[in-house]
Amino acid sequence: MLRQVSLGTLGLIVGGILSVTGFVAYFSANATLNLVGFFYGIPILLGGLALKAAELSPVPLVTSSPSVLTLREQQATPTQNQIRQDVTRYRYGQEAHLDSSLEHLGLSPTDEERPVLQCLREEDVAGAYALILEFESPLISFETWQQKQDKIERFFGPGLRVELAQPESERVEVALVAAMAEPIGQV
Image (tube, rainbow, N blue to C red; front, side):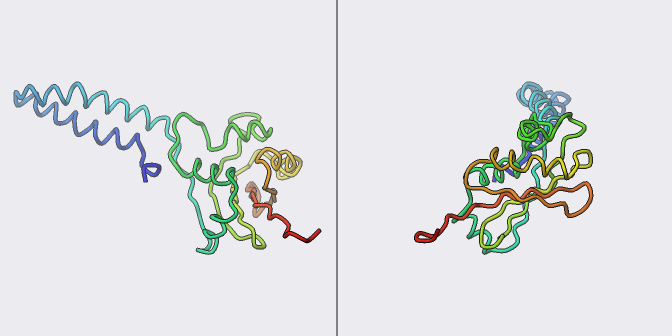
């Protein structure tokens, strides 16, 4: 629940209420409320402004069906869960979601060229849980993404395979698909 609350907005609201209360108390000669407003309200208001300036909003998550939630519980890797939890909450002090990961993969040479994560989708891909990251990538070509596919797969760890798609120009979908273990007795 707290992941979906903007601390910057909360600071602005609480700080604003306390500051206004302090100003009203100052003009009505109520020294106690005046102190509360000035000594607590203004710093909280300024903290809220600072957080709002450094805020990165959560990415929307789309789940196609309730059966996908069951697949997530059964098959999702720790990496898939961490990505889903990290990008669907407010972040502070970051330029973009997954910015350090994209930089490590060589997909973010500069801040201007960095692909931007637009949405997450959860789907059933041939009976396997898949977390699909939808990027807006106008300056990094799909061919570059394809060249980095093996590196992306190694980076996100064991138990995942990566599938790339380009549904439209300047958009790239990176599907992190849980690798299903082979049934015992089959080769």
